[in-house]
Length: 354
Ligand code: SAM
Image 1: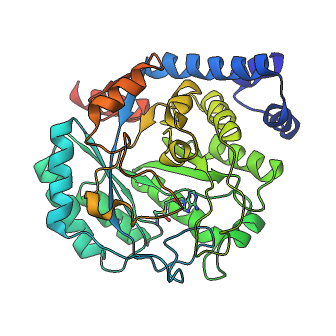
Image 2: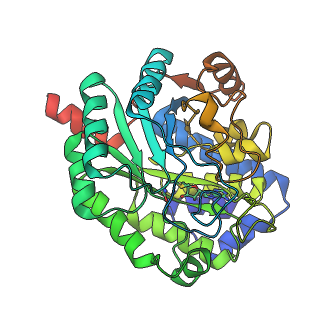
């Protein structure tokens, strides 16, 4: 518990402290970690939980990440792509349900080139000036990111996947590079996006060492958002037979990230909900403060299949606001209708208004 207090105070931890926290079976210590993280989250955001409406644009992908069910060489994957009209309908449904952030995510699909994507972003921006537009479209050129930002996008999610270059090389084909991933993150930040990085917990070849590097990367990069969730094997991929990441380890890492970087927007991810029936509630109890229900058209949800058995029709669906409200209330937190910006961005807006 002294270690946890120290991490909270200094916002840092050693590799050995990380190992201790990830391996301890002292239930009191784990509960203390969880409570400390929740206190820190409440200190920054109160008991508010922000919701983002996830719109999965396309299951086509030019990349071949070894872990992902959407990888181009997965011949088992069913491919679809939303039309612009379908995307706007998702936003309209989401807005009525109280969503004030739309997350447009997809495989790296050349159909959504800069012209098309900028038109879509601009149209959403015009229609919903009070909403945040988050993009998660993978690696693009700096110029492309700049154009998307100028069209009205505010945030960009691009998980770094691992902060260890050798580990990165074991998870990706040789044409993808760690340096380019880092270049993208840096460009996004410099352009002015609120940026999210993140990684899978329990990805093949992950070690305490690589996780420690991930946490150090988060400390130095200071992203506004961090997305972490357990790795879940996907059929038709080279890692189909690998074991899934652990829910418990994911929860401990969520708590640690909250202690190391208090203002972070931290989702309790669908992957966590897929591995445990109360995964997202447990994530919130461990310090998460964002949920991202699915706003994609129902008929396509099962085909955005990053991993096997992905939740797609139950309470995680955006339509089920009432169920989600109820679930979140069991954690003592409260779902709010709000853009849910990171505190620094909010301050900037307030400064502009004053
Ligand atoms: N193409 C975009 C990108 O690269 O950021 C966005 C889509 S990508 C499928 C979104 C995230 O899904 C990845 O960053 C990865 O961490 C996660 N993911 C992919 N395969 C997964 C798996 N088998 N288990 C858990 N998460 C996975």
